[in-house]
Length: 194
Image (cartoon, rainbow, N blue to C red; front, top):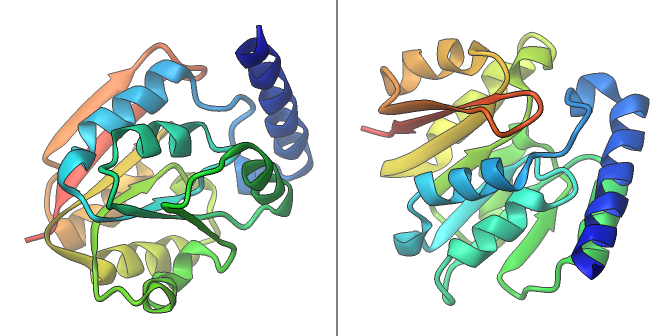
């Protein structure tokens, strides 16, 4: 019963912020349990030590990532919505998690703040198709720059705009699927940095 109440409250927080900031949030519903678990499994987090999550929203994917991570790994979730950050700080208690409000276009600075040289896995739920022109490219450049060679970039998206941004830097995606048990259904893509 406690988890159902938590899920309802989390959904309400998400919906309220989606209505107030439609270009920033872009989706009306938070990610489903099926989607967040699929994302965490596809990302192969068991071997990753330094993980970045872009656009965690209310933290559903964050929790799934933390469950799949090893005990000595670290996760930085990058979120610009103050209400989502406040919600995550209240509902997630894990020493492996750091939340940054610097914006995804500042990835090199964010990993420097952590004392990291590069990142093993970057997982993104930010809606690339609704970002202002230029910001989408700046974020993708930062993803490519901070990811280590053979590191994985995973994006879960409603539209395929992300593939047009990633392909010039990463080449064709290495994996693609659609998770239909989500409202709306989401595409999951992965790329490996050469």
